[in-house]
Image (tube, rainbow, N blue to C red):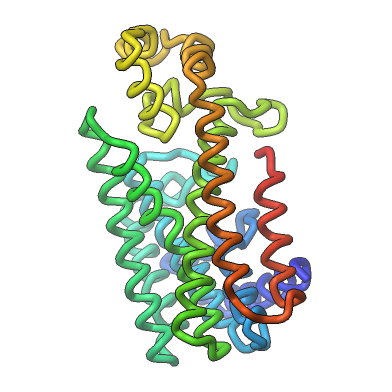
Length: 315
């Protein structure tokens, strides 16, 4: 079923891309959307509809709208982060320039709204969550200038920046299929918990994943001093224990930080095990919300398969 939803999404997106004008404004959109991607968010729109008996073919515009918005955020995030690569390819502002990336991203947002505007209820859901994603990005930037970010603040930031768009996708699908307000809340909470678990699992993979599987240097976020769940919790426990090793590594110039020392500290403090337990708690919260939705089990099966794929990923 996931393969069917992915095929429907890919085919509809290809038709949309084929209809774009061949000019400087639209070329970056086609480039970014043409990069390899899992399409998790648009597929969740189709799954959200399927759970409540809707036809996936009837929510393809909304699914593509969510994907356009997601890529708008990526295009602008890459500028803000000065990222040279996106999925192994030059970012839009590197391939063209910053002005083109800003303008093309703006146009991509407009096109996302064009996909959502036909249904007032869908548009209201989209407006709420699109603004929250922007709030999450602002908090993320604010945290770069602070040294006192708490776990609660970090969790709220990733909820806004990452998790709510999964919730948005599922709620839009559910809304289009005629789900009740209570069931829309439940499937939205399912997506939010899943998104939080997804981000925390990313943190764990970056620090403790097999580099041959992830394709990334081990502990890149730790070396860069990025405020992840692992770093924040590690510093809290280190300070409480009077262990200065982690802070001493962070005080060194970037190229001189010993990631293996940092990983050892986190393991000794049990931060890795605590993070894994938090992932499992969030995933249980997601399953509990899905269990509360009273529909035939076979309608939930694609969502459960998606969760299993996310749980099993190693990169």
